[in-house]
Image 1: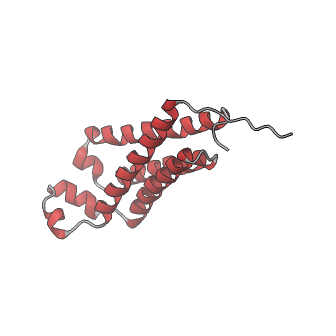
Image 2: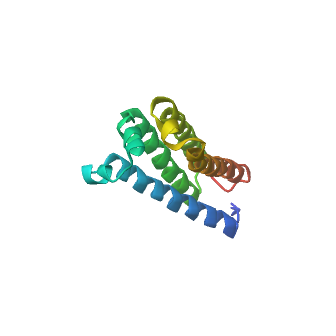
Length: 145
């Protein structure tokens, strides 16, 4: 006789998983707009914003892609109840840190935005840390297989 136990996930689990997917899909949209910016859109930027955009090397856009697509895969992993969600969220977090640090080290982002420009990156890192932590907690509780 075989018995199977099903682990009940809270409503909060599903809300967080769906939020993670929507959040990271928005990130994919922003990445797409970043790498496909038209000359008309570039012309609408302020001179400092344009300098940051033009000074951004390709590897930062690759890190951006890894961050958002890794986040999407992590969210899909949560929705599918897979243990690899945690790995994907960690990959996303590391790529996000590479992207942010790289942007402030190799572009004139600091001159263009100053300390106030760090507000959104800090929010992004906090959310990425939370998703990585939460997926690890879910794995520890046996919610992911």
